[in-house]
Amino acid sequence: MVARRIGIVLVILLVILHYQIWIAPDGLRQWVRLGHMIDVQDEKIDKLKARNDLLDAEVRDLKQGLEAVEERARRELGMVGEGETFYQFVHEPDHDRPTSAPAPSPASP
Image 1 (cartoon, rainbow, N blue to C red):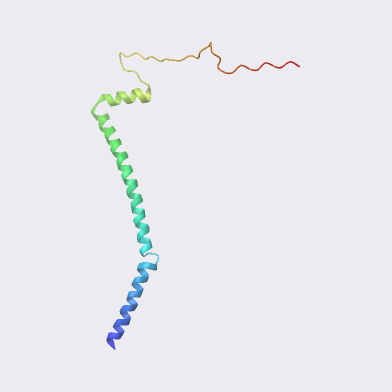
Image 2: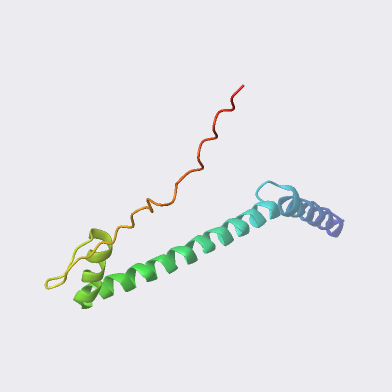
């Protein structure tokens, strides 16, 4: 008789545990959803690590030599170094060639 009661209790516990795993909101579905969220966060972390590596390399370049500082000043600020001459070439439009099609002449009646 005792063995039968223990068997019934164990079956009830088994049913409850299966409910918790397969059907309950915080069961297997939640576990799969959290796994997906972890994958998304891992991708974001990888992108941020790559960006940090680029920024770290740029900081090292700026700390180690003046070439990076000069290159950045030329590119971003348009600065010219000492003893250098700045040349700017401007292309003028051709005056011999019309820039648009000539207007049609009005037809006489």
